[in-house]
Every structure is written in structure tokens, then in C-alpha cells.
Image (cartoon, rainbow, N blue to C red):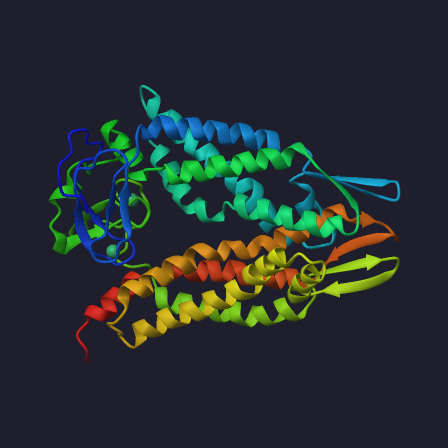
Length: 424
Ligand SMILES: [Zn+2]
Ligand SMILES: [Zn+2]
């Protein structure tokens, strides 16, 4: 942590609870472009930036514009034997729905269109609301929801899956790239920049300075005695647990010392995902029907086909994202859960890093699902060649979503608690 009080400070000293290890510590005054890390587990407690509000406004306006270009435009155009099909971002979900897989269609639509659009819209609403003479009170709830939407916005995974679909399609049809793909590429870069340059605490503090009603916390962050402090999981505010408060005075979300029922929930979700992993790999995720003959293909089969076509980097990518990542997540979560059960005191930092990896890589497994939605939407050439989705895809999407929920319901602070608890 930085100790010197800088001249051009952008933040006030605040008491914070580390989300990864539960340690309460005072984050000092920081200059722009500075980083404060947890003394115990190295988690980033705060990362300040130059002119955070204007940067966010500019990046989110650009993202909105790019999304408005990408959504109605042509993503890909495929043709064979005189027939042509055009796909946009909605074609995948529509194609899956036509094959009776509305659950999968809903997941693809939410993660590739709805969640990114909502995230950008909420950010703009908050940033513009903050500039109004009387900012609306509910912008704090809207900003809190941005935090919860973040993991479900998967533009970057979608873009990679479009690339894999392109390589697969090139083998069977003539294919052209549309405007939407370029817009998505630019949108991806803009959204990554917005995430990297976001100092959420600055926006929360800007709301406090604007005196948005319902806040009585201006000094709570510094003065609260550490013994009765409770940190908000959503906005990071530390308030006094002794006041019998059930909701955070700043963001309005529920306050709790640790994620509720964390161990039981993580075990249940993990076991359910492990069971679904079997049908996800045994049943075909798609079937290519070429001249009347069907070739069902499992996830592993898909990777093998890419390898056979000489596309070994993409084969390795699909194999890693779809086969290895779910297994690594489940094995990793089992190691973390067991370490709490056995009250292990060693390698706490390493285990915390393992948790961060598990929490961040799960989304990449969606590559296969997104790719399939594009193939199903585009390759419908009647008796010539048609691609149909298989039951394995629903099971696989179930695995990805369940493991994501399992990782989110795990509370890494419990590992640090267990290591400090006196042994019976
Ligand atoms: Zn920590
Ligand atoms: Zn809060």
C-alpha cells in the first residue's frame, strides 16, 4: 500500500474490507493512476485513474454507439449452391429457438446482447445522472446492479466464438464478413478499456459528495471501529454492524459478514455441474446433416475436427475452454472447499489466487455454445447441408452456468477465517 499523502490526491482515506481475505485496512489518500493492494493477500483494493468520470462517459458513449451499429448489422453472410443466408446477433438465438431450444436461446441472447446493453445503459444513466443539478436518488441502485451484471456480459467470448465459427464454416460454405463483426471488435476494445479504467469507488464517492438522499455514511468509512465493522459486498462501503443494519446505507443491497450458506451452496452447485458434465460430453452438441447423412459431433469431436483440418491453435483453444476449464474449476473448488473443512493454514495466498483464477476463467467455456448458435443460424441449406443443435449443448450450457454460480457463491474469506479459528 502507498503511504505518502500525495499533493494531487483524488481519494480520501477510507476503511475497506478486502473482498478476498476479509482483512479490514485503511486505504490512504491516493494520487491518480495509483494502486492500493491488500497487505495480506495482494488483492487490489483500489485503482485510481485520471479524470475517471469523463473517461467513463466517453468510453460508454462510444460503446453504446458501437453496439447500436453492431446489433442490426450483418455479422456474416454464407452461400452455397446459389442459396445465401445472412446472420446478425439475433440469428443465433432465433435459430436455437426454432429447434425448440429456447433455454439456450435465452442464455445466448442475455449474455451477448441484453447484458452488455444493460451494462452500458446503466453506466450512462449513472454518469449522466451525476451531472444533473438534482441527481435522481435511485442511481445508486442502478450502479449497484452494474456490479452484478458485469460477469454476465460476454462480448469478448462471443467475438472469439465468431472467429472459431468462421474457420469451421470456411470448410463447408462460401463466407463473407459483415460490418457487425468490425463493430464488435471495436466494442470489445472499448468495453475492456472502460472496465480497466473504472474506479467504482470514485463514482460512489461522487454520489456521496452530491448528497444523494439516503446516505449517512460520509465519515463511516474512517471512524468505524474495526471490531464491529461490516463491509458491503456490492459497493465496498464499511459501516457499523452494531447498528443492526440489514442493508448497506450507500447502495441499498443486503449486508452480510460472509456470503450466506457459502459452503453448502458451492458444494451443491459444484456436484450438480459435475453430474451434468457427463451428458454434456456424451451427447452430441450438434449434428451436421450433409446430403441426407447425419454426423453427430460431441464437444471433443468438434475439437478433433478442427485438429483434422490443421487448425491446431483453435483446436487447442476449444479443447482448453470446453473440456479443461470446467474440470479445472470443479477440481479447484473442491480443493478450496476441502481446505476450509480441514482448516488448512498453509498457502493461503496461493489458494486465494486460485480462487481468483476460477472466478474469472469460467465464462470462456461459453465459446462452444456461442459458436454453435452461429452455425445453427447460418447453415440451413435444406437437403444440401444443415446443422442442428443437440441435447449435449443444453447440458453443457448448464455446466458452465452452474460452475459460474458455484464460483460466485464461494466466499474466499472463509479460508482465512478457518486458518485463524482455534483448532478443536
Ligand atoms: Zn486481502
Ligand atoms: Zn453497499
